[in-house]
Image (cartoon, rainbow, N blue to C red; front, side):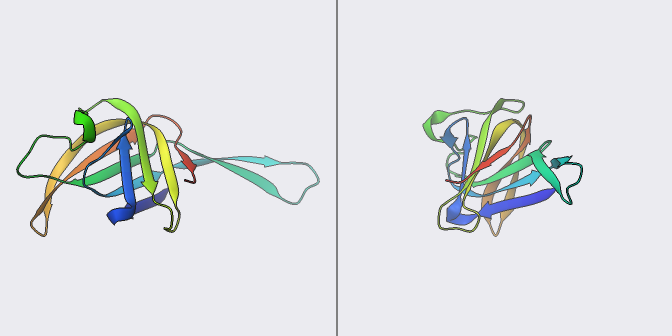
Length: 135
């Protein structure tokens, strides 16, 4: 299992094509299974990875003057058990620039307060393969 995260102004997260507003960071836990290929007489094996059973979380600032959830642009709404495309991106110019994308289900969220600032963390389970592409 591999853990990848991004935070601050270089972290962008999208749900079904809409940006999370005031995203402060995201984290993805990738579970990887490898298929092994070898040829008789060769001294090496080729391992091809495929992500499976991964989870993710996205953390956003909460506007305490407008407690409506979720904080998306365009009035997009989300509820637990909703399935859509989750895209987690690191901006160009940062180490590991690119994005992870896959179909996921929102399994709920939690409110918290860090240094007096209200945040909301949304949790997801990917339902299929997670892909990575450079941006």
